[in-house]
Length: 125
Image 1: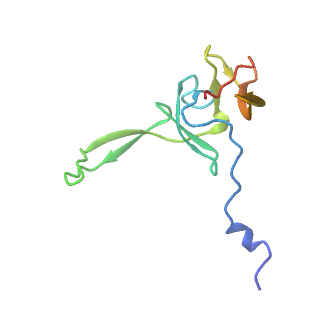
Image 2 (image 1 turned 90 degrees about the vertical axis):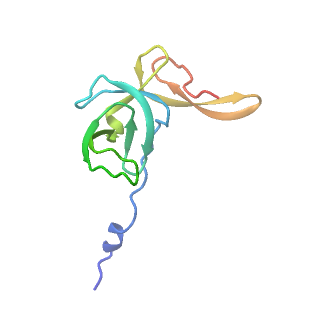
């Protein structure tokens, strides 16, 4: 007989509510690359991780493949880092948490992201 809980393992996990978006400037606040800053290249909401440019570099040994134009050797690429280990950077270089506020732009109501420390609007339209 099948258990009622057996179905839960097959379901996809619920995506996390991540306020960081692609192309945001973030600073690493924990881990081996603590203190580095970089742009967000990709956001994985299901895993709760972000890919940051120049952070968490991993080395991989690559075989040469002339058919694909791949040169052999040791290739470096970014690895994903957990979203809790990065913080948004404002225009003046300070790290901040992200909040939201309702704003009216050209007569239309929009939700915009704001910096909790300064109140600066982070979304550029």
